Length: 292
Ligand SMILES: [Zn+2]
Image (tube, rainbow, N blue to C red; front, side, top):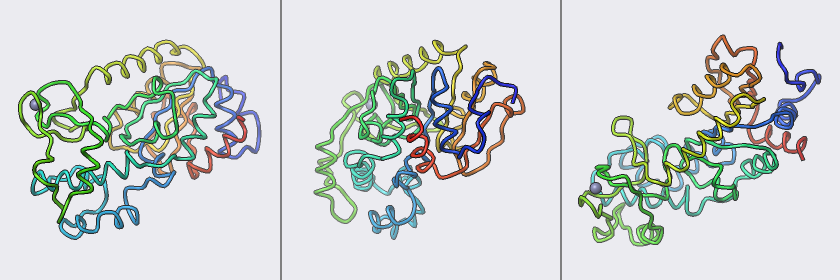
């Protein structure tokens, strides 16, 4: 490879050891996290975890996975909140610590880094990240927004979500628990981005975005590792494509993608792309051993 990274000169490294070595060598790391990272820590949206928690919704609607269910247009607002309250409890309020998230955080300590994620779960809080270094691009399950997006403010009421879990019957929460927008009176919904209408982006979101963009600018010419973990092709405009473009624009940068699947890599950065196909949790664990 015609590049400045010494790690490639070491022979016979496993994927995990190579990852650890590259992180050590980098001046800065920009990390993009997708659903595959949470799945690697067992927070899967399909299979047993979904089937056991939502047999009622699966039976009624024939839902295939939790993402489909999360976005589903349920029959009534009472049903919507019956599902969402249980979903948010599972994937946010009560989400346990993910070992890969902890290992990643420990590997990055002492290194300039910043995270952008398309996940909306609680994994970064649970693993006690410095939240000034995390940008939640696609909202958070723990926040509400006006379903008409009439104003740019999010709301939070975890006690209400708990009460909805407790008091729901036959897949419906009591109507008196439905939260409404204080501005326009439309029902609130979970903070999420819609392909057509976008997302409520409040002052905190804007601050996260500004910190992320400032970091990108600060490290732009350095030996940067653009590390994407478990990022698929649902929304490539947020992580995958910008990471590839920033790598192309900086000849000292490297694009590392951790994914079992193959996605097309632009010709311009083929030489400076490393595809780690192995198990994400295992590779991070091995890298952690190298870095510590
Ligand atoms: Zn409103």
